[in-house]
Image (cartoon, rainbow, N blue to C red; front, side):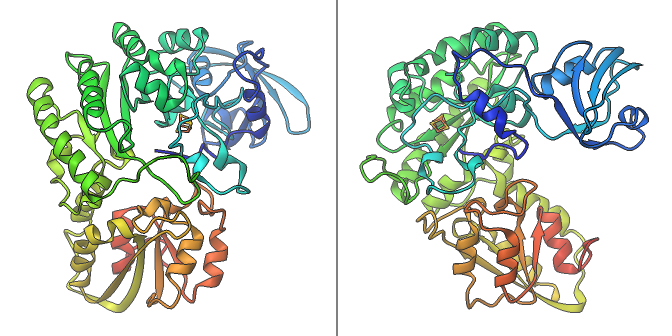
Length: 470
Ligand code: SF4
């Protein structure tokens, strides 16, 4: 699935990266301090937000990974530039496991590696033009994969990158596989370098490095026998004490109304979802016997699209692909169980609240609503909305946009307040995927909006125990 790159990737650095693999690497930009932890070494040294860390022991970090390695020394010489341009050299001694307590505005100081593929199902290409620039960045950067779990294809790595992965033990990485058959993977990614995947998996295995895999299923392209081969090939690297492939998520392709009319892609419908479930569940059983783990994980969307019950929580083992939508609803329900062990019988102050979610998940979340509504004096209304913006009647919560909310909530009963899952917003920024700012939604709605971070938040808002309850 697609994830927008972090807010902290400098535009100048992107342009540098866009020069391509042949371009001579430029000197990394300085690491700009964003936060200073109170009482940390950085605080004692007088670091301030806006300070620019130029080098550590004479070396310029390329990214947060380098920075972490360099800071691991006991004796450090830091070259720092104030916001007014004054240069300082700071020498210090510390324990090797002590950090500086500094946060930085960016993760990458030498630019984002963008992808060199042209997948017809690419979500980034299925967006309307004219939106914020970061929405069009095709992140395929192994550093972000290691740091944040974003998926990469391994098609744009140089020899130096492979050496660095080995030397710095950048593991696990998260790899978009889609197919293991070389010719098919090349066709799916529209890149001959994609054919090298099986060799690359052997490379990881030989060095005791690990990956998590994902397969985006496009009906008619990589489902059926191709999917069976892909999962079986991946499972071939999943045995032993130190498996090279830790898990494989199987997710349905997401198609929007902005895609080209002649792309020949077919959306996943109920029959297709049922076929894929019927194919993968027996494979899970086989892998469980062979490997001790179900290994191949179907995202929640398959069951919702198929109209079938989600597997019970214990089938997801330790939720290795939760971030990819595998078992996330079950994990939410489990967190809710914990948060509702001590619900009051009644509320002192009656409350009527509304909760907006994607149409695809509303039914699965109805038991949550029923349980909360058993508290006397509490009425929680759930609104499961489609996405006219993407042209998807069935949509997960994280893809709902500001315009979907404005259209879908018009004339609905919103109670006293609207509870809005923060997953709809760009991380750390009050803006939706279609560029609608959160304040614009707030101004248009007749009730205040409250952001929800998770199950505990939902329960706390409903029973009025949230610390920052307005
Ligand atoms: S690898 Fe394919 S799906 Fe991912 S960003 Fe590149 S073109 Fe898009």
